[in-house]
Length: 389
Image (cartoon, rainbow, N blue to C red; front, side):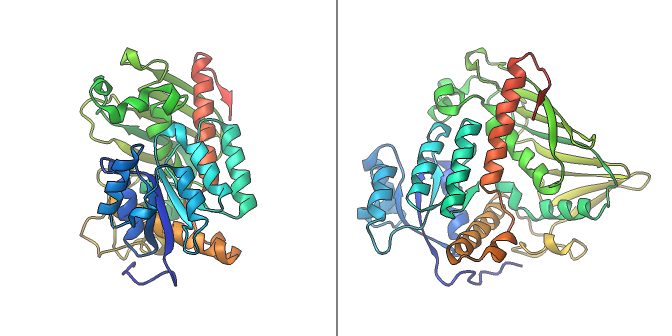
């Protein structure tokens, strides 16, 4: 159980790019990173408006001289300080991720980046090569991947409790954009603008989340080919989709499906993953994250609760409070940031053994997310043809 004990001798000197005063995701980053004292927020370029960003940075307790107008100034001037930053989190629109991540890696910094990592597989591979050559950690914020019951599902599948895996049904299908809300909401406008959002909307924005949960639960399941159909039910969003169905065939014959949507009217969040084996199935839903449903054919369904002693050991390591009390988004993100910190520290010390023992959404996860979106768009643009993965 995590109890607040120090994990590192000294906190990592950390900065943020984006995530300003009105950014919901910025607050989640800061809450997760600062919770266990593994990071110290010492610098930032929080807003496209420098004065507004500086004012908010001061409210966060950052030295005004270290509240920068832009990320280039942040990286250049911090590099000149003996106490300069060691890591940066990027919480900006999609179209900026590649340039900022590349600049951060070239400055010798570890990076935590919002997904998607970038727009193209070529860009993603460039970042991977750069990160590995510099020995830097790149983490992606697939937030719920840090929840304990995802670890429980992984352990159960590895122990053959489901039998042979036949199907994986995934979805992230909310309803908050079932009307053209972007006409009144600037925070949504960039998500449906190809110049800032990239080649897709919901495939990259929400679909890659359950896809990564599947990678965690089923690390040996590899996509062989896929087909995708995408729709723009709000016509003004075309060519970007607000709904998509992706069918995947895995090596070995298992099948998978991802429903990515922002127009599932009435749905609050709708992120679910169901893994179906030859003798049993399990299902997890992020709106009820403390329960994992386990259904053995011919037996009553079971509900496994977070924090209970009957779970696998790996599912108990990241508990922050005993069973019965709910844990959710903030705890899952905090667990990820804790792993990011441990990985950054191990990389700085050259401890390859400690680094290899850590599991978190890394640069490889970022590359695979970009690959999946690129292949989905390729399929959809060919009238939903099957394409090799």
